[in-house]
Image (cartoon, rainbow, N blue to C red; front, side, top):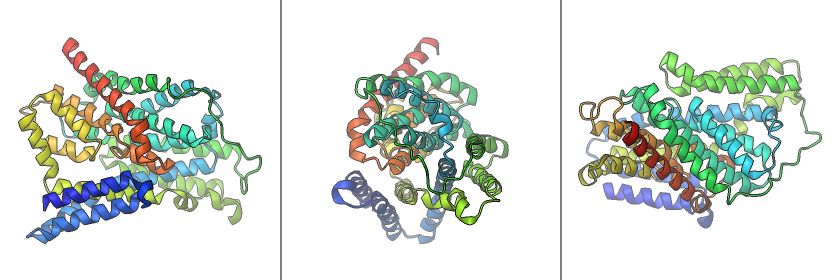
Length: 426
């Protein structure tokens, strides 16, 4: 049974990777893969109710991610509909690709630590759309955004879900993880930027701005209100989580509700034709639903592997055969580029208790770095990558050829920095 689930997962993975070659949308392949994995799993089970209970439990966890993604996308679409991103784009005057790399990379890195890697990717990819006309140039910058956002999230207790898991689980403390991982994480972004400067050269082409946009009745004041309200509400999501201890998607839904009210109020005096393109209902139609369904399929497939015990077996095998702490953490980080890092970290937390590795132990810190940044190596290895793939329709193979090697070098550079840092200063 286990080998059949694994084969279906691999076949689905191949179908997603060669989406354009076989002519089947990746969302369709992911959904079929996810459902088939659970179908095989339940057919072989004696206790069917146990399997449905496991599925319900996983669905509760992954639906939080989906609603979070949907809420963030909708808020970003509202800002975009009001031309709110012009507030930033009009201040970025450079057309030099090298300078743009630094601006986009650093913005993504630090913004991800405050928000999280998923929200940051959605915001930054939307921003790049306003700055860059040529698709392949946007793809290169989106690749950098994925790397920078994942690197920025790794050193913050609220920046990446795996670091958050270790923080909530008591394996790491907030202040210590920031101090220990900010430098390695920065290097995991720095190396790709330095290398990209030799590839991504010249001037960018900016999008042609329409002189008169149909139904464009927003004022400068409305753009300012929507932009700053949207950004502020996104920034307050981790604060909401810290204060209430509710999951992040609740803060995102709360923020979306407030944005809904704001848009209704500021356009209340306009007729239906004037206001229809600035409503939440319109933004919901514009978000990429196919990407959300793709995410659902991938997470369903991975949760089936977890429930069937495959991820636990993989972690156990590494513990038995590899043994070295550095090698285990690095291997788990590399594995997180193929399967979701959340169940990998959850399995690792179950394998090692705090008696073996106490709070703020070297292993937990290194694990947070590796699982946070390792997902950048493949575009479907992180929530940030999946979001960028959906927003910009980035080809899996293109990313593998152009970006994966940069992310891999950055990943190992940061790992070396962390090991040296720990060796020299403890």
